[in-house]
Image 1: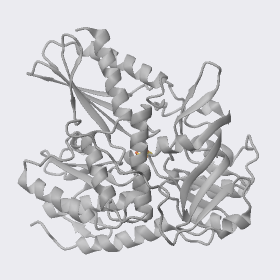
Image 2: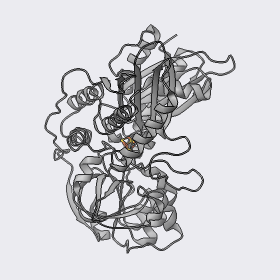
Image 3: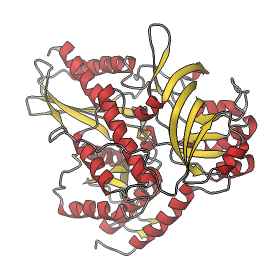
Image 4: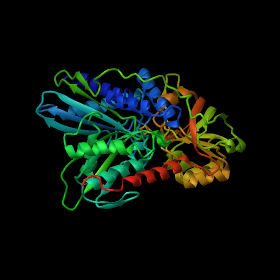
Length: 511
Ligand code: SF4
């Protein structure tokens, strides 16, 4: 095989997967955008998402800054050297990372050190299969951490919140799947796609669930019982009212694919792999002699054109505020859940490592009245040594729950921006101290990168690019107040109302 050409083909597969959302996924997102009531926060979020998809395409930049766990599935004809394929994939990964198409995402689990090139123990995942066909089928999924953390595995029989007992039958499986959508809320950047694996052991069950994500969004399950179950879930999960980003709304789920394998008599697992709207998976057919791409998968059909984005369109009753740090307590106390905030001026990024660090160290900058953005951006340094933001959407905030309230009070931080909301400890601190939580649109990495006008500095680079504290100059960085300083949390409200709706699906449907 021409290995140089094959490596180039793998590079193209990585870049396209990271920057160009597949057409079957685009069709699902477009249908959701059409369904959503104009003027709501969910409609505004979907408009930002569709705008972001187009920007990523035009800029050939990552759709979301979290370029996920790269997982390759490669089928090769007999006689193709899989060791050479592996090496070519490694080289392509290094190049894609260097060019800012992938964020350095491979972290030593014990030391926290980032390898910097996306290679490391267990990274990337490459699964080989040999087959009788005469071409190579190579597929890639980039599944981010926010949605990966919402995966769930059930062991039947079990008791489920809102749904009661789930037995070892099709109806028990139905309850688990409905519950999996409820428990994810908006934290996996809904509206999402789920792959479900029935049976197997704990490991193969999850593998089967992830495998379902390689199915086309619009395919039809050949197993009639599973087809009916997929149809049921698609209809009723969207009645839970969780909506895009968990803001409430008509669309919570964009796809549901279910597979089944045998199990041990003593075990009955239902495993669910949750994928965000930024469902990045593509595939190619490759000539094993030339190493060239012959065909792309999931990209058939007409170009999907999204209607003109309308980020400005928000609820008629929602108010819009403009804030520039340093922000006063008085300004914060004026904000209420549902308000839209546009931030201009300085903000600082801070995620897991920074929050842990700030608990028992001084801050490298004065954070009084400042804004912290939960974000691990993709950054590139030019030849003059200047940093440029390539992708900068919010990361899941709930991971900072143990620290956030204490840090806000300790340093006088007035606003935190992230996604998915935070818990009771932070809500209490917002009330006591006079702080606000702003929900940005998860995955809208290009949209937010565009709001960042310059990078003015960086601290704590020893934590690696995603975890460092970046000093950003922003303009009209838009987010929604979802937790205010008066004890109100939209996340708490949507969780409660969706649990009530979930309990309507308690009665058996499938015998
Ligand atoms: S869209 Fe959200 S869940 Fe998906 S990779 Fe990006 S931040 Fe993570």
